[in-house]
Length: 417
Image 1: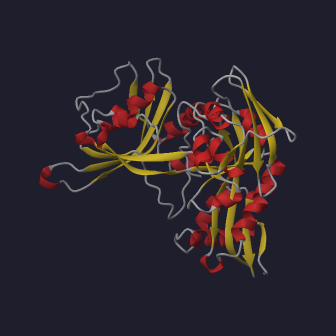
Image 2 (image 1 turned 90 degrees about the vertical axis):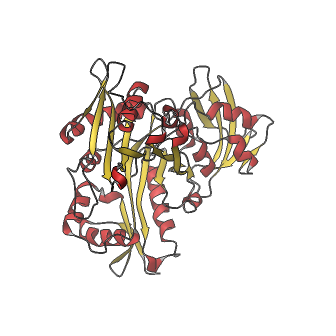
Image 3 (image 1 turned 30 degrees about the vertical axis):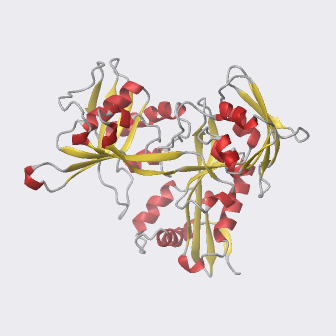
């Protein structure tokens, strides 16, 4: 239909950014500073567009990322982002063509999975993606939380200190690398992530607002936690404070650091409401409160979606519970990228090995999108069987798979990308 799908050249970038902003209902103008800032961290070889008569009508981009799986290993992942189709060119298959080109290239590169944050739930299942992590955001009514308002700091000998932006840029990356190895679903952060989060890399209209940061240090002086937040001090009716605190980031490598940072934020003078930002659904926060009902669920939704590209690599990378086991999975993939029959063997130490087993009778059959839901341990095989999305061909196979796949804590991806 005269629409060309291709990678973007530097001379195309201003037009590509204009189409991206239109697709996400942002400011229709494209300042040169924004184009220059995006050019500095985009890989144009992984930036695609749909062009008609020189005008960009759809955008698509991917980035290399490492995804942590249960057990702490990292998978090579293609992180898909900036998917937008101009309103004048909807329902023409442009997103499918862009996604098809990326997934084929990711498979050829050797990426084990592709990941994305879905703006809308119904879009990406048809491309083989399934929701692999979920998030919950709470709004905490602090006066109802029954916390000790005399709290003066951690009682474990550690300390919480406000941190200037330069200190966050220096210490944050190392802390995050330790955090992500213990958090299935977490991804690595390139240098420009920290530059953007701390205001070092900006462009007009990016909406950045300088936040506060705090670091938790253990009694030995080790940095074990980081919190980031902004405050909105609203009108005080009848001279009573009404101050909102919104958490942008809180991550910790120890339980002590996590508790200390939450208590620090919840004990802040004048603060009457704390918005937690997107947390793991089984976050400890509500149970830190004297009255957990003071934490009202503001959002509960799917977050990181995962598309398996290499079944043996993906399933061999993670660890499993329940000791030795064996499952044969028949995986359907309409795109022909990752389908087939595979045997997963798990050992007493929790390690697993997965290999093709085309002649073996299947224990379970499922679509590659449902394998994405299961791969980080968040979804229940038995629930998918009840929904008719997984077929159970050997009695007890679903229960055995649940024992193997599920994890003690739910996976969590703290980053939008």
